[in-house]
Length: 311
Image 1: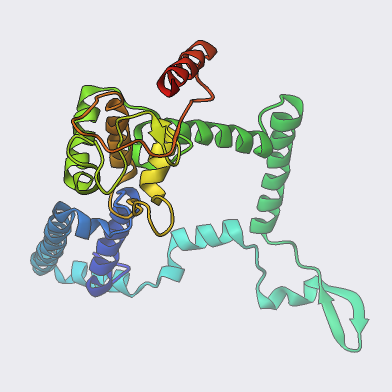
Image 2 (image 1 turned 180 degrees about the horizontal axis):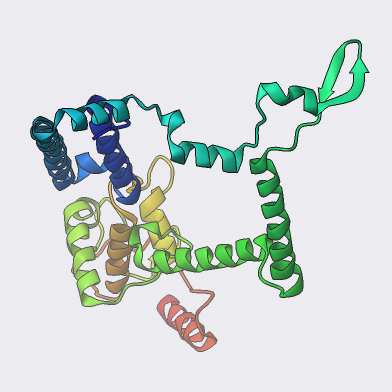
């Protein structure tokens, strides 16, 4: 059997074609698929082994078949192997469909009467591939005109706007579940018992040295009263823990140590301790914080409590 490519080219080309296809279609992030997924490497190794084995089997079958041929059949086989690709019927058919050339002997029939300083012009037809492509472009233009300007199908601008809107919604949905993308503007108060317990664990690990286990205050302020140095509420507490307290005498910034989700949990836990009245608390520091976004009734009650406390 005549083969267009020799085995030392055929095997690497097939192998790397499969390798590149797997790298393209398998999502492996910033690492090659065959490194991230060991089974891919195993598959490629087995595939290469089978590829080489198939070539050896085919070569052995060709060898046995050749020795079973008669002298006449061997001669015909050798003649077939000598035929070049450019002499094959398929090649000539494709060439004729794409290129309409004329032999050099017919050049005299193509000469025009134009003669510029001895430079003569031939009346050659346009190549078939060019004219076919031109007609295809005309057909495409009519289809495009009908689709976008007559039937009103979404054009590139509308498709872009639609895709951007869908992407924005996808990002918003992702942010809802991506806890570590929150910041001081998007953080919300957690009330779930599991989150409060997780916040307590973070507090016990990192905060009791300055605030005591009961949050009554030591080096740091008392966290159980209604006074706040840098503002209360989940957004202010989250920001204070993240960025740190007052320069030179406040709490260090924890954003390099704790994840945003952990800061949200510990901030929610701290706020859950409001009014817990620990034993021997540190005197109040800062000012009474009132949530401006709270309902007026709740705000009035807070102001009333403040007045009672002062009296």
